[in-house]
Length: 524
Image 1 (cartoon, helix red, strand yellow):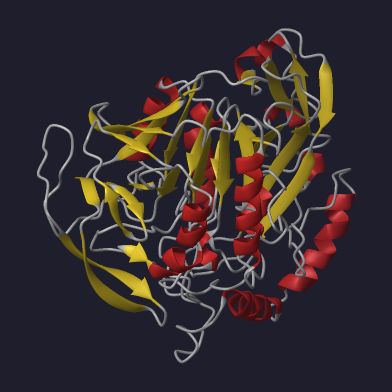
Image 2 (cartoon, rainbow, N blue to C red):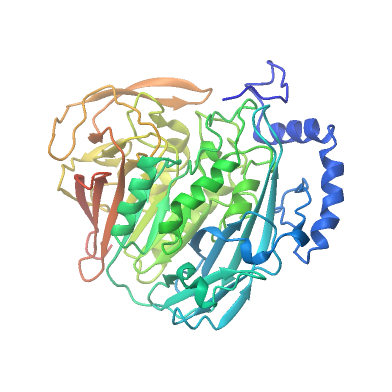
């Protein structure tokens, strides 16, 4: 990538935390007059009738340049990049988000039970985002993200919706093609499918996986972080820069799926962007509206939970505990881990919950030569997963597919071959790395082993990250399935007297590369 213009001294370049990077960038660009420009344009935005830009709870101001709204005909401004997300209760809450290329007047969502009768109008919130020219080759970018919260919906109901603003009415028959649909979660447990992957980016492979996911007709999709790679480095260092325009490409690419399938995301190392906020997540907060029931939704938007049918889902931010990439390590001062302990207990005590699935970015157990395993995740969270008998853990970070045997105490407690079954109470937890969503692939130090090409090994030599960013060599026996290719995860949930998760990994060709099932002991 381009060399940053911010001129960070070499002695600082490798040891600044995310808040320190934010302070440095703000100070550097403020001295060039950006703060004064932002103050002037705040009045210009107020004059358009738009709400003031949200700062996602951060201390630093959101800076804008004048959008010159009075000169833009709203009928010519087409919304794009629609993406859905559940609120804390998927039965009654949906969040609709989208983007416009210019500031618009009075944005809203129309909702109805028929595509030609969008009778209810819900005003939308505007979150405007300014990104300065962080390198000589990148321009300053202004982005406008819109969000509407739908509450008190009917469980198990399909709704139709359209997004609009003054001059662009989705109820107009000429806009019929822009109408989308979504369904709320049912009251009682029913069979459903959800999908998952991480490390997507923008490109042909990412698009191919999106279309395959749509074919699964999932109730929701879990994205385990590293969303678009606007920051292509992801090292968490001051030298990292980001091209905000890549977010436009990403949201346009995923719209075909995310406009109808709730796209439940969390944060990876490539999603920390220091300019926007002290924790690096100001851009995330501007672009996404996620459940606000985490330990601190203003500071950690990628930490939350929800329950759909008989499955409880927990999203975590592994940047907080990583030993490998440490710019945000420890930012929650242990609050996220304490919250995780409480939330797992609450989900286990929730009537009707058969399974608990946890997803986050950095891998607890992986053997690639790129990132391998993060000892910080193992130390902080694996004991809690075992304490509360989590049923499935999904990670990204390593751009491959890899699946473990059933692990307990960091060792194989039960071998789970392709097509096998695992009792998560009796046998332990299966960890899946599903990082083949679209970015350039990594490799293993040993041969692949997947459905149609089974080459089981007694052990694999790898390493894990320990404190001090040191690599600790290890020889492991838990690496059961390895596939160097683009892929994603599809999970069929079957409730009933003997509930089960049927987990399948599919290559971007549609070929099955792995499958297994998770059950729970009777009475557990």
